[in-house]
Length: 237
Length: 237
Image (cartoon, rainbow over all chains, first blue to last red; front, side):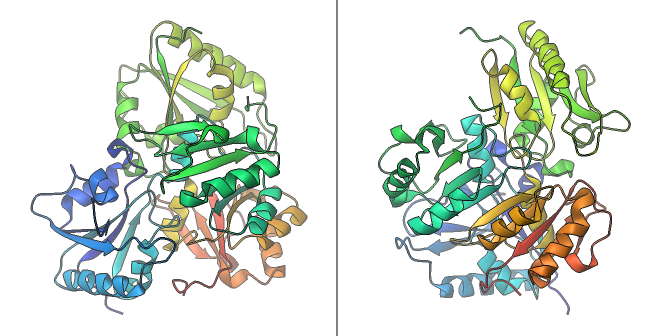
């Protein structure tokens, strides 16, 4: 199958600090003819904010407006339309960079565009620093060691599912906290693991928060997670 | 407690491509007075190779020689000695950057130095692009989506442990393949998951390999992994 002339780049922008962007992501975005990024219906796009100093003044910007409807995945029609717009630019020979917070393929929405475009388009992925490793750095604590089982869980899962998964792992990250923080805290308390649980919010940003889960704010932002370590390695203190 | 004047940086160098180093890691390493890195007893240090063009000609280089004894963790005495050497430089007011392949806290040996130094030293972590997300980018496939459970497993674990963990997850990464590849392949075949398993070797490097697990080479390098996706999301094809 003939692919488009323009190239599509899926670009990880890292966790927030513009210095935690890779050299490749910075170069590719600064050279891109078109820069697309998810944006809320009100307010600024986080990934665009991270890359603001890299985007060329000559670039065409293409915000993909994702309405913030709590607890619901955005309508697939939004990605249909964005994919069509991007394809038009690629067919016209333009290179398009799509900005993705953290890493594009770690629980990211880039997959919706990838699924629609990968058969027709030359795609190059640029992996990024994920919130997972950025949070471990913020907490100054290993995520996992040696042959530890490391499991990533999304807070919207049921308590039963979460408990079973936590039971089977030595190291656990709970992402997508938001309004689920209270329930997560109750669950972890019930499991007797509060002393091993750390809350990290806005890793790598000036307003980063790192604290024992027991002291975490009641209202967790979307960009926060819990790291839990059940192992007994000598590096834990 | 008074901390040292010199600062210790734990620096993630990413999966191999020098362009997949963060801007911060590049800057910090280029400014460091001392650059330390793990090195094999014969041959070159991978993390040093990645950062070769960033290291200042004036920097003091401190290789931490890790003898390659198959299947055994290196003697803790090596880290005792390295920590002492690093501490001496920090006490003399030098900044020391320790290079770590991928991310320093994702199954990395940096934790052994961190455990020895964190109480006496000003430490700053610089997270990096992990092999996990780099491999997903190489495979052009999401690691995990929405509320998928993602589990990272080390190939040296027993078949029973691996099977239980694979059973409880939608997305699985099996790391530290090496000589365990054959056993992993037999296990995944027995679980009927061969069609969903991809082998990735040397992600992001010129000699990167991406192929169905069934076609993987018999002898997997240390820097390789299997990605397994059991979910049925629309983005899989």
